[in-house]
Amino acid sequence: MNVPHSTTAIVIGAGLSGLAAATELRARNIPVTILEASDRVADPWRARHPRLRLNIHRHFARLPGHHEPRNPDTFLPRDAVVDYLSEYARQLDADIHFETRVLSVHRVDDIWKIETNNGDYFCEHLIVATGRENVPDMPVWPGMDEFGGSIIHAADFGDPSDYDGKKVLVIGAGNSGTDVLNHLSRSNPAQVWVSVRHGPSILPSRVFGFSLQRLANLFSRFPKWSLDPIFSVMQHSFFGNLRRYGLRRHAMGGGSRMLKDGVTFALDDGFVAALKAWRFAAVRETVGFTPNAVELADGQKIYPEVVICATGYRADLDGLFGHMRVLDIKGYPLHPMGEEDPRNPGLWFTGYGLLFQGFFHAAGVSANRIAKGIEANTGAHSLAPGYYHSTKVATQNAASLEGAGQ
Image (cartoon, rainbow, N blue to C red; front, side):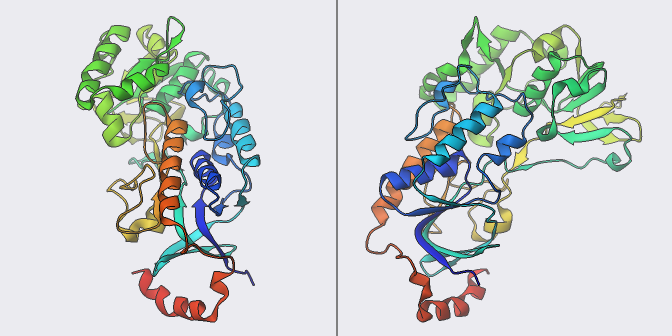
């Protein structure tokens, strides 16, 4: 029989946001336990394709209480991120319970009960850090089951050389789509189409060798109303009129899309040059499949061998928290950046909001906010180890849990 575990704070997820939150809590001597479904930290990063690089400058890839990554590359490769997070976890003075998958979450009076495959956990403060891009989002188009080619998500892109000599369709030209297209521009596919509903908000990764993302602190100080025209002028200055090449402009500006919808800028590193050289062709939105073709919104058919769906990711929080009125219509937390949920005291989300400086910086901001909030609310009410061993509490739980899930 698994013995219940109780502590002041529990973090769900041992990714960068969860580790950052735990670090800030331990810096304030607040007991914390991390629950991680996989058997190691940074597991989602390990699953990404081997040539993946961050689109944030390494200066912004630092977590609280730790040094900047020592890798010399401006944009960190996948393996450097994995190494950094692994090192960060090793220096953390907190338990990480691996292979512990959360099955349900309920609030019983002023305490959180977390049911897992390894038994029950109890805490006063629950920090959710499972990631904004937890699950690949794969749309369903008519006829895709009968398509004779290969259909994959961008998360499974693999090695770019695997596509040499093949006809490839990339659906979507946002952040992940442009990443795929950048890699394909340096490989030797037979043909590449990019299917877009709206054109991306795209900037060059470097200008005269200087990373534009290094200016993120400056951009964050601009008034919100000014961001869309600023980025529109920048995009046109660097790339000219991309509508000539089939990339239409989105009705919402790049700054607004990021701040309101969480759609980050795409960073070009070869894609636009390939488009302008007519090595790549931008085509209309994908609407369906036949056994040997992909149908587009304008009635055109194309004949790829491989379709790569760069269609984004989901947080996948509805199963655990959908009943608590803490998520928006897209399934993201209403309070995504370390703010305590007002309807559910002691519930915090981190890793779901975006800042111009990137998700490492956002993790640090959220972690500090959470730790300060919990420190202010924690004291005599903190759970002592073994709190839930008492008969009184066990009886109370059995009587009230059914109603708590309604």
